[in-house]
Image (cartoon, rainbow, N blue to C red; front, side, top):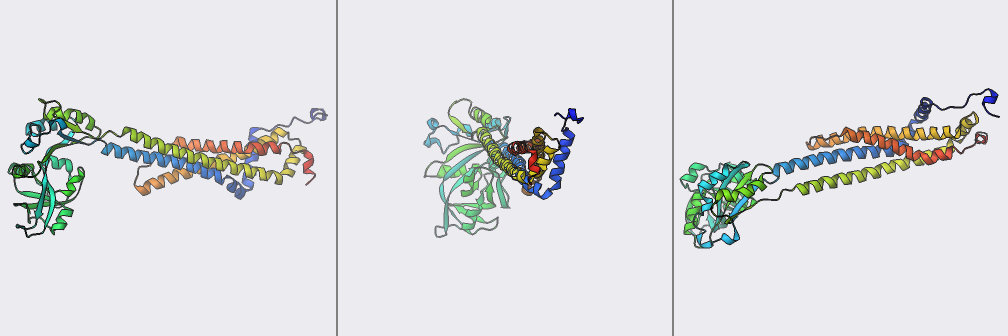
Length: 410
């Protein structure tokens, strides 16, 4: 006999009633619900936090690349044009007129001449009996110092006046100064038989790390040392500091600016633009984040499924009673599925909020600018709901097969 023949209406389960029943079921056992959804919370938090932190790290890596990328170019004679016999004479490509043209190129921030004289004994006092330290002396004009950017801890660097007058001043790296027992400026040192006044001491450089092993003197003074040298000829080059990303362009223009009359006589060496490395790092970080998040969400799905399956046995009388008063199997299926979906959605929302807090906290602690994508939080919430939906399919299917007589057997 049908319900309408008995004067009863057709059983219906409205969406409002479904959500109400699901919420009451979850709220009725808050501790159990929290433990059930803890996996989803952790999964969503891991999803948002890993994506947020990886995006923040990507931004930091990008900023470092933008600041450091291709800011240095070195110009030296090509292998075919090297002539040791002429190395002690100033070559045409180190002429001040060519340097003036080079400094006028768009993207050049500093440029200067440099030469490295053969290894020379450095002494605190004159005379061969004085303790000595052997080092290669570097001659650099003020423009080259602007490229090297030594971090002077005592004294100062020399300037154009010292360069034009060939003043016998010297900059010492901290390691060499300590070995000579020099801890102040204004004292004298001797390179071979030539005396120099220590004008400054530095302990770091922005570019050309080989400078940390060599005392630095004005370029004009180094040329005089090269003329009288009997050992190997000096090594000459021009060093250039460029704007970020301009090194490749300047590397193509610098040889023509310095020596337009002899194409191929000098060559420019510029570091490669690490765009491919940057993209590879960004891709690897993002891929790793997605894998970790997927694993965490999978753990949350299994957690909800296990809890829902275990709860069916305890709720058999309740489900049987619902069937006895008219609930259809589809209603039972929808209710159980609604509970797990709502549970997963709540876990996703809580986890997304926790992920945002974690990202912001880690960024602030490290002094970074946090990069938080609200879209990832929404995706995490949706993934939590989807995890709950998938987790409830099997338990809900088992629950809909419970017969009304089960309510009388418990």
